[in-house]
Length: 361
Image (cartoon, rainbow, N blue to C red; front, side):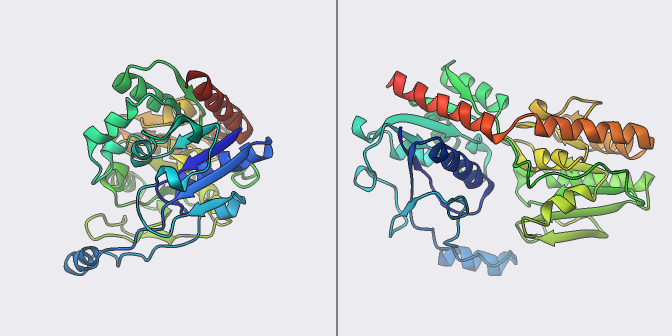
């Protein structure tokens, strides 16, 4: 197949990493794959002014690096930051929208540009600044939808009424995200990924950590993230935080914790949860995105309701208070669950979804 991916931004985000992995694997399976993206958006003067007034981190200049470069996938960047049009795209058998705006961009393209597929990695109406009604309208466009979690499949079916949806669940690179069997740390240790975005729910994680510390004063807290700490969303007191650690360092961080905590309010999947489990760290998380697909409660971790910091803390304490043998059993179950689904499985399902798009065109 001749396959074109249309992306809103070619960068080092987790969403682009997933697209790039699928694109590389499709090329390895003999398909002709192109990725087309606008030029990076530059911060506006208003954004610089807001950073000064509100003491937010200085807006980052756009990077030309992307996961497509890392994965060796051909990428065409426009010279301007603007919507992609028919004249920017090669003829193809299938064209894949990867964000709600890109779904609008490809809506009126002629058939020679490809049968239309829509790779849905999140419900973007809940991301700050995104127009909810416009987002939902794209889910009702007559494209074949490919989703990364059962949760998103349910969203697409409910919003669009279309029952024909392909599930291509995210996976991990088992050669990168892995850790040997281990016992608990000499000092009880809890880990997290930091993000100041409201929908990531870090305020819930922070409250839960405070509750755990009341019972376990010696608790060590470690975390990492891609964004600077904001005064409105502070890190837990006496925590160790690494900003944008090298990829090789991230598995070490996961493996240095006894329990990993994640409290997103909504998420398409949540790769860090899967990565932590792949490194043999039990997960305590809210029910969002992919966590119901990953965690068997009481076996590989625990799930709690969104915004329930009290129960999140209780479940973290359950893991931290386990006997060594019990903890090792949960650690092994987390590892087994994370490694049971591979990128080869995901890419095979993704390819089937593209063929289904062609059949329906």
